[in-house]
Image 1 (cartoon, rainbow, N blue to C red):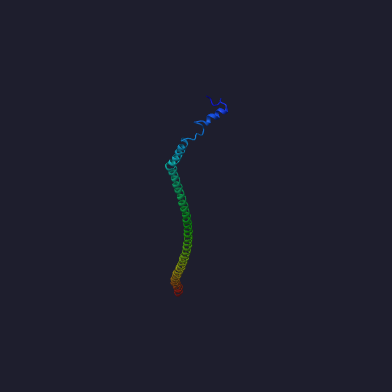
Image 2 (cartoon, rainbow, N blue to C red):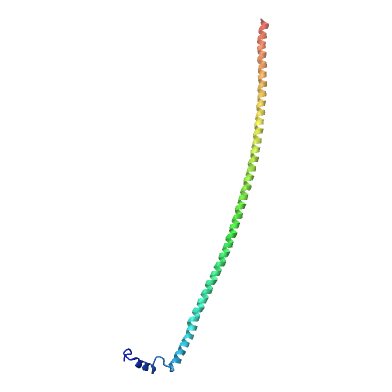
Length: 163
């Protein structure tokens, strides 16, 4: 018999009898017990392990995130320290360079003064030697002039004495 071709009254009569939509006999409590048992079994076998796994995973991720943020803060602090050390090292290097330049200028000034002093003493020594050579040359010339004048005198006087 087809349910679609039946009048509504017959359908209600059939549904109220045995095997209807809501049959309140021993199968309903058995179905409820099966449902509760299935829920308990699934809770212990499936839901709790998955819940624990998800909690562990969340704790692991949160731990890694907190470790990463702590390490990032530590890295930032180290970076700041290294930048300060680099800044100090640059300042020290500039100071050393300035000191070296000052010292080099002093050394150059001292060596230049010494070179000028040596040059002046060398010029003075050369002047003394030239003066001494000049004096010697003048003495030799005077001696030669005296000899020549003596010869000229002798020749002139000697000729006059002969005349």
